[in-house]
Amino acid sequence: MDPGPIDGALRDLSPQVLGILVRRGADFAAAEDAVQEALVEAVRRWPAELPTEPKGWLVTVAWRRFLDARRSDVARQRRELAQVDEPPPGPTEDRDDTLLLLFMCCHPTLTPASAVALTLRAVGGLTTRQIAEAYLVPEATMAQRISRAKRSISGVEVGTPGDLSTVLKVLYLIFNEGYTGEVDLAAEAIRLTRQLAGSSEEPEVAGLLALMLLHHARRAARFAADGTLVPLAEQDRSRWDEHAIAEGVVVLQAALARDRLGEYQAQAAIAALHADARSTAETDWPQVLEWYDELARLTDSPVVALNRAVAVGEVDGPLAGLRAVEQVPSDVPRRTAVRAYLHERAGDRSTAHDLYVTAADQATSAAERDHLTRQAARLHDRP
Amino acid sequence: MAKYLLLKHYRGGPERTDYGTIPMSDWTPEEVSDHIAFMNHVADDLRERGEYVDGQALSPDGTFVRYDGPGRPPVTDGPFAETKDLIAGWMVIDVDSVERAHEAAAYLSSAPGKGGEPIQEWIEVRPFLEEPKSVSD
Figure: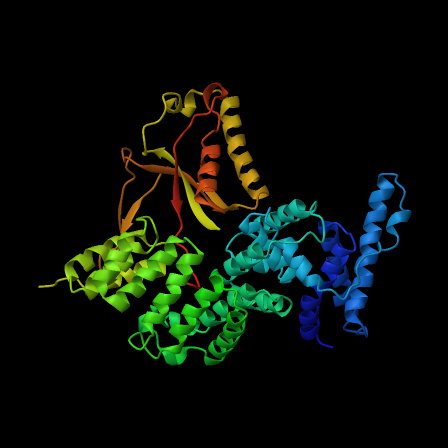
């Protein structure tokens, strides 16, 4: 067997094996070390002879390594070692241990950055180097971040019900980071969310999956060949991924049918309405606005209020949109850019130009800044 | 997570505390060593927290350079002994919030000077422009 499929299989199996060890009562950090050793052993031995039960093989080897490490620790501490020889009685192992692991890695006591790093490492099976590259930090820094995170959750009792909303937030953060290194974090977030959706009935999980699929579908159209950001209104919609859109819509409809609306479902519904339109003009803006009203009831996020103002501008005209922007706190990112856009639509090119200049200064990404600078340049009055 | 550039200035920025204006050449060798050791300790602490990205000290001797047309050598100017602003070094950190970035900068600014007291020098904190997010509308 060549190394390719083995690597893939190990990446799928390692979080499951880690989950089993943790549920058997192994300390998280010690379990992770043991699983790493078992993986090294597998890479060495599997090419010659692939075990009939790869997962069982890994669990056995990892558990043995864990016990060996425990024994030498225990011996060092001159303690009795009999009680660790056998796995403690517990629930059977057909439960989804990956899920258990995901909840541990997204424990609410961790900072978002730690939870993200630990999730990608322990559940995603990415190497520390890959995660470091994706977040553009040195590998040593990422290694520290991960080992700190492991230490913080070492005391967490296994099986304590996790906080689903924190898990969803971590997955959303991973998705939103996009991709900068060799690892496609958006695709990775979709893979993990899909896994979670397979074992959770909670409609918000499906809502988040749908949201990711619908946004991911537009990715090829979001940037021009030279890296320039292309706003939704100007995107070549023939470049949107129809399969991802179709899947997103199906997942969303199933979630909405459960009749427990949440933030992610409402956001996905808006994304689905955009995906459904052949152009900005053909977008069902009244329905988009209704969903923003719904979303505003679910969250007091000022970002939602700002996006809602854009929809108001499309439905009731730019002046109504500008009145809606007045209600949005002035420090919300992109508020000035939205005002510039609405002033231009209202025919006031000069005000729009000045606002685009200010908005470019306030941009938080270079791609956005360059886009806004071009808008300002386009409206510049030249003799 | 967001990256921030922490800038340490030789000159420029808001007015320094009186204590912070005592030149290093007036310190004892031990005080200089303690100051440098503290700076290294801050970097180690940031590494241990998984927040350190990079950092360098810069020579004060800078030269201004510009293009001067096709086939012509670059024009250089400086160094300028009296420029208002002079950067001594920089550090890049990757942290969870702007509050945490300020906390780290304040820690750096607590480095000891003459007599071992914090010199409270101003550290400039500049956010990096990020990659655009996957969800933007």
